Length: 94
Image (cartoon, rainbow, N blue to C red; front, side):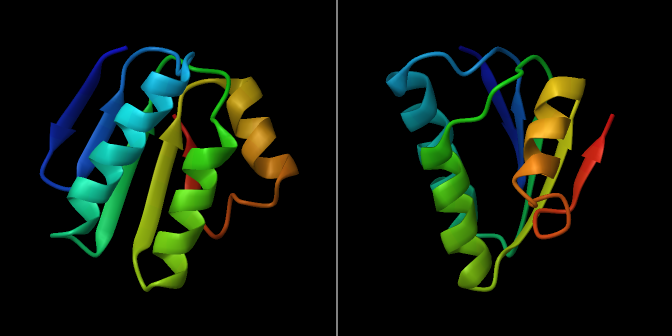
């Protein structure tokens, strides 16, 4: 799985398939959260998003971090919408 990191932005280029993939994403998010209050995540090619990452993002939001997520996949956007996360994570469809 390929991830790019630019300042406070993470770009997820491939589907998050394995536990190792999810850990890689979480570690990258934690790294960015150490130095930034605003965390941007762009999900380009995935229709799923593991609950362990959602849990981490909720904890960061509760600690005062701002989370901004843009998704390219309609199914993933609907998933976030069904979980009532579109407002709290500022999710938008690309």
